[in-house]
Image 1: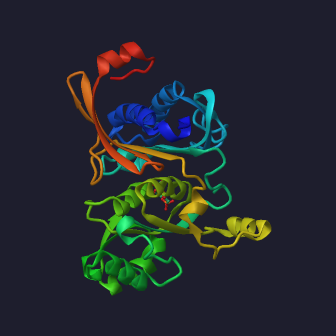
Image 2: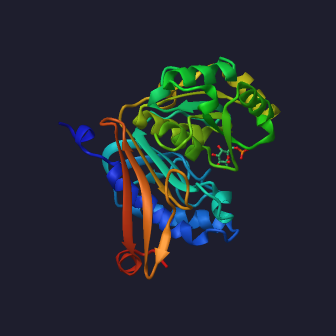
Length: 328
Ligand code: VTB
């Protein structure tokens, strides 16, 4: 077997998301989004630099001038192979973390070079995502009520048994009304629709579907996870202002085009990892104890379809000795 088939990069990548969470977790509830984000970035970058791969950040902290590290276009990793795209959100839900709210996570996806959707033109996408038990049932072009009915049928439940996760935003007023009219339950979230998508796709979370408009980079990262889990996701670009509408016109982009999972991630070599920072439905956050901490992560690989939960206990004194990072 080739290396691509045998190696589970996620098991190495999880050390980076764990390190990010250990550092960012100290900022829980302290009201400083930038410091939390910077701490996660520093830690992740150091671990990523030790992993044998030739990575290019395609979804990262922004443009080089504003982001000193993990910026879009940055080369990450050591070695020539495998050549991969990296999509990373060192703190998905910075406000959640800064305010000590649930479900902030460190998240990263890696896939074959050139395979991740280039979202740069339009920052938002309309999304619908479900787990394996409702894969094949959704169609983003259908009305909300019909999608809910189809998901309910696929799961052999009533629409009133379903819970939809939606970002709490004024732009979702119509969507929220439609879901209420259809009779489904709803979980409105402050931020973090990657965690929302994960909850929709993973069993046992009490969430059945993610709906609504959120970030395009987050859509690509979520798509990587859903691909590993075996669920389904569809998106459409959602230009938010005249500038983006102009871009759409000039580039001949199609706002009605439905992006399937395979349009967002054109690869079967996909790896996804997430580590909880604050406690959430899906992942426990970082818990600290005397010179140590525990982390809780999700580790996935598309080829094998293996989804692992990894619980780790870290000894911060030893980590301080091993790395240049100020684990405290
Ligand atoms: C989301 C979500 C992020 O921004 O996709 C999103 O995952 C987009 O919506 O956590 P808004 O611009 O309206 O916030 C976040 O909520 C924050 O980056």
